[in-house]
Length: 445
Image 1 (cartoon, rainbow, N blue to C red):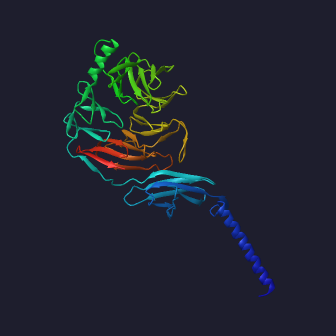
Image 2 (cartoon, rainbow, N blue to C red; image 1 turned 180 degrees about the vertical axis):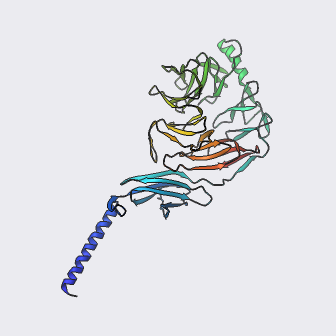
Image 3 (cartoon, one colour; image 1 turned 60 degrees about the horizontal axis):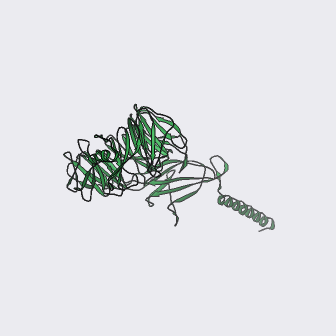
């Protein structure tokens, strides 16, 4: 080979290695050639967390092999050209998860808290006899049959359960005459007639004669031996251990009462809102009125109060800012999220929506005041937050139970879990429900 040809070959090889090395360096730094648009762009990445981890993932219809970190439950897909990608995660026997995710230059797009739910979950029979209704207490199921309450074959006083105490065997029941009973499920025959005890203590301890109807009753948020009772004109603490009573709110013509984890709230017919902090034992009054309120719901931390007016109008009071926000009208069901940053509501035309009370980061940026309409197609009657699965809610309507994803990125995944459902209770990854045959069943997630 002549000298000139050898030099030309060496030059070509040098140029090739220079270009290849440069391109590899670009790849290492996240830069690639976008052939479609004929330009060099910085790539983005996708971060996934899903269960089960042996599910298969496809991006733009192509299967992708993921490597999960030893100290992380997530996996990263790198060097993706910016754009919108169609993602599917699937496994036999499970509902698939689908999403269109936008990849941005130099950024990581996250998709976490993904659960692939069983398409045909295992149902465990709890009670095959015909029941009218049921309630879930701490590791106990109370059923109603022929207008009587039972636990493990033992009849309880009352015709329905009003309240249960978490991590306790105590429940409150009510009979047809509006008498309330405190029952310890470990010894169901040992019960207290709360109505008689309340009126007796009201007369003997407070010097207030006559019998008064109890219009609100609940367990004290953190004191094991106390109950919170409400009448038309006052809110009381009833100590069932010391057999004592204490008025904490005096307000004429009370229309609604609510509890947070530390406070009691009451509103009357003229719209006056009064509170009492059960921890520091201090009361207060909101410096403005909201008339025609028929229901009040407190967030767990007490920062927000949801007020539902006569015609179903929903207002939320931010107690820190002393401001009201109109959320929607014609509301039929409302509940705050477990982390107190969102409120979900169902309208009377059976639409489900989530309103962000605060801005917070998740897979996407959620902005205060943003509404996510996740009940497309309607049919919702109520819902339950799945606190162990923060990206999902259970939705009930038209005798169907569905698992609904909470994510503003399309498509929003929704799965019909069970049809022919009459009533359900979700408690600690356990779903109890009665079917059209009035049998009680359990699905464990």
